[in-house]
Length: 225
Image (cartoon, rainbow, N blue to C red; front, side, top):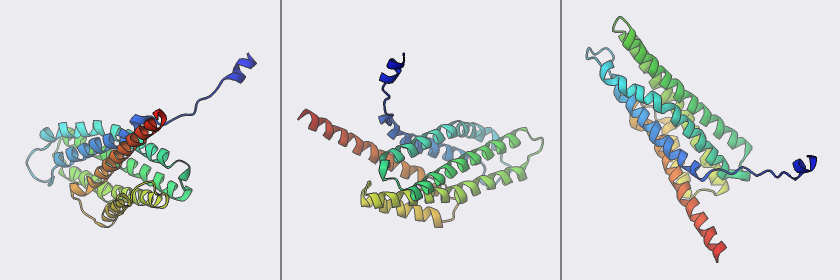
């Protein structure tokens, strides 16, 4: 029995090839949930026009999509770390990982607030305009002030890692810096500003997928030759 256990061989875990699609999934689900929430919540909660009936389905859909976008974002972080491998620097990796997790946590909190606003507006005996307004402002502050800045730190740290290691082309690093600086210093509640981060994640994921397929194709040709 001891000999059998001694002969047992362990296999090294490898990142699934499909994991690179996680960034694209995150970009699609996160952007969709943001659009649904922004279009569902009233721009002016004190307007007498009822919004719960028309916006309830959109908010519920966004609340369903949000956890899956978070899971996909965790996979995206894993893909990035796997691509770095032994080149990963402890300082920048800590900032990169910490800011990414903080961004994800704030996104979940923001969606939780949106769900609370919907519940209050739907079940309250009064119009609850002040509560809806308060919840909407908290959600916007979390999304556009704190979460976006954590996303900017995430991008800057990752761009610095790419610049020092040469894992990404220079044009993609410069684009990362430009988008990150705009998110870091531009304070606005515009929906399009929030969508810049998932769009960037989608571009990075597509690049990783394309270059990964090219590398595998070249390896296969070299092996066959």
